[in-house]
Amino acid sequence: MLAFARAAAADAALVASLPLDSDGRTWLRLDGPGGSEAWLIGWPPGTGTGWHDHGGSHGAFVTASGLLTEDALAARIPTEGWRTLELAEGVDRQRLLTPGRGRAFGPHHVHQVLNSTARHAVSVHAYYPPLPLMRRYSRSGDVLRLEQTERPEEW
Ligand SMILES: [Fe+2]
Image 1 (spheres, protein in one colour):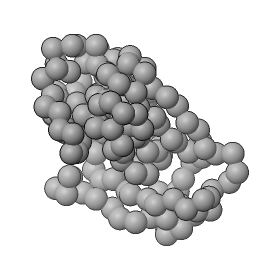
Image 2: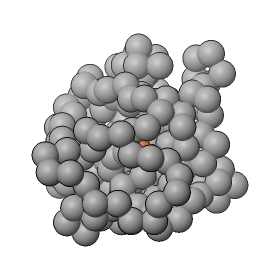
Image 3: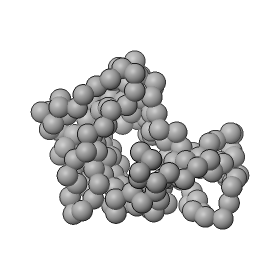
Image 4: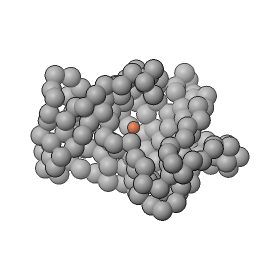
């Protein structure tokens, strides 16, 4: 999936086909490899996902244009059975993803992705299996709180 995301991110015609909207994120569904779910996503300045997981799916994403920041937790977060969780010190990781840079992640990955720059960014994302759900979290200092679980019909 990372190779797919990298190739799609390098496809200038594909990236240019994504409509951009200064008021919010835009999406274009792609045919992901091997039954994966894939998206081209446009990020206006200041937009971000908020903290979330991927419902147990693996994933990969690569910046195609602009600059994205990923804040991630280097900790294995239990998927069920808690409402708030105090994070250990030192689990925060931040990556700046310039065009062509990205990452793959495993089924327990919790992160947020944001465009904190003044220009639009575009990225390619792939998930396998296709996202069954996403858990959304809020973060206050070291405390992570489960806010809601979203199903595909809600996004
Ligand atoms: Fe994500």
